[in-house]
Length: 332
Figure 1 (tube, rainbow, N blue to C red):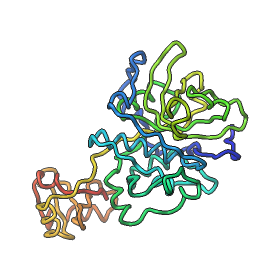
Figure 2: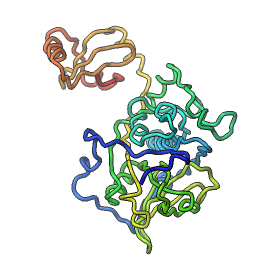
Figure 3: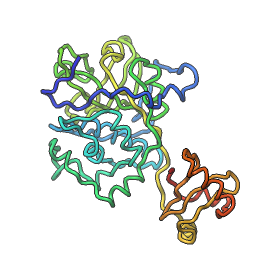
Figure 4: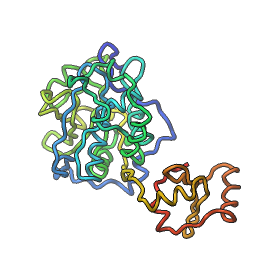
């Protein structure tokens, strides 16, 4: 089925890429899921997420991933702070509107996400238009701060294995999926598969799973305001919706600790060894001190870096593993 371009397109199926990291590669054996017990991110963490309203914009991919990163940040810090859907969408939108799911997953990993206080998704407090959501508002200063809320990696789950999807939700606090749908099937909070031969595409954040007499299901938080569904939340049954064929591009994020300002002691060392090569005397890892971080050269893939590696052992500055671990780092 082709997606309906007469409706706000929202989400598009990703282009196949054999280089994508697969979630199943880090799951050992068949996932063991207690469907009867179920799982829900909000209940597990004791939080209530704000429901966004994308209005007439096609920004659902940005809406879904920013809500996901809010949760990952809460898990680390214990603070629920609104992340900006616009800061993701303005970087990934397609000319016709909407975005690929994978681009939404890559953005928090490559560059982080902004807080809503830095880049508002609601001009003058009102739901956004497509034009507004595309407007470039990320300044160099904001881009630097966005790195605080950077995820570690993204992995593809696929839509064929319900157990694998549930495993990702329970272990990574959610996943983001796209789905083909139509207006008739999405009138209620329990969504139905599209009957139209020309459906639209939509993205949303999966927050839970369970099973009842109808079958296995996934709960999600939508971005159509609190008046839609059940307080802005919906449910999709795996078999009833035929998710293997009608859902697409399911991605999960693996978080990493938020960036923290280096201590005065570490800043003093960074300034002292500015533009110098440092190496860990315990592990042998090495990097280049640049600005307020260490460019880590752990996995050289070019002959030039191999030569540098040999040079380091003769002329680099050795530091203890304890000090090395405190340096803010960026892999090169």
